[in-house]
Length: 151
Image 1 (tube, rainbow, N blue to C red):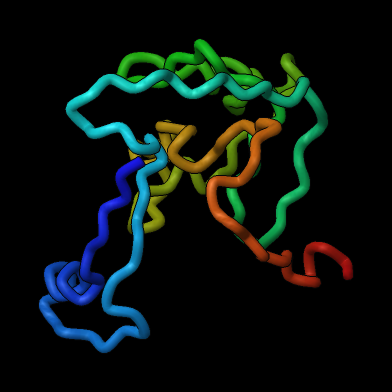
Image 2: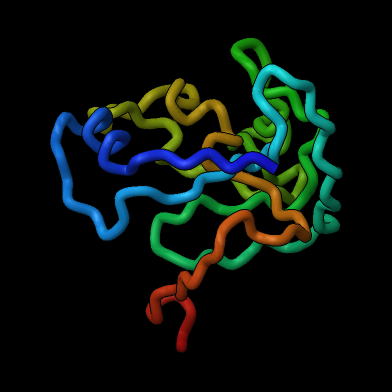
């Protein structure tokens, strides 16, 4: 397994144009691909199991995009089609028992109300993701704010 060492000062200087003092001048970085070089083929990661369809998932912070409580494998969301809107649109949400998309999805950057979903809110999976039973990629000690969690 080859782990490349890089100089954080060089990287930070390249990104910011500044020299920044850091605790450590070098650190080990490894790819999520593992020890496989980019030029080599890697095996596909094992598919995770999506949670079964369920009630909406509680949010952990104000303005958190709702999490998708069902699998979306095979859903097409592109310039010509958006499978999510077939159930979550204002026209169809009652019929399917789905959560309707927020009014904020019909506003542009300048808060002008639009007749259709804003282009910047059209690609649902930019913000909304389904939940799977998977080990976190990185350690996380996030705690929800008490106003939402009730603790």
